[in-house]
Length: 89
Image (cartoon, rainbow, N blue to C red; front, side, top):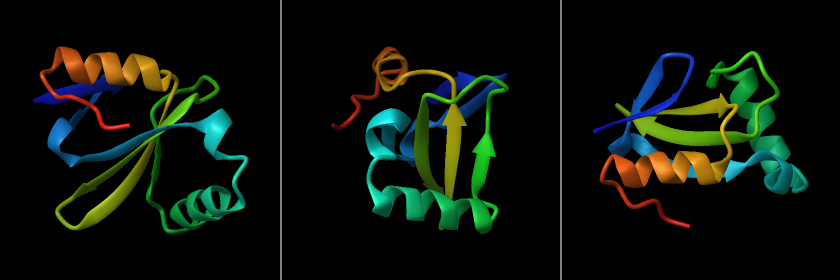
């Protein structure tokens, strides 16, 4: 199944490792360092022109990607459930 994450982009639900709220997770220096490293490595894909609310970490074909989306984690989780995939918390 595919999960719509905004701007006509969808992800394969089996590739999703985690969905994280930016406001809550960026208070950690480790998360900020991870996101900076991902950005420097060209692994960050911004899916919105708006202020992102969450990031989705994926792994597909042994490659990690971070998608920044305008949707909250609750919205993305609801879309996962609608697609038949139960999100882990």
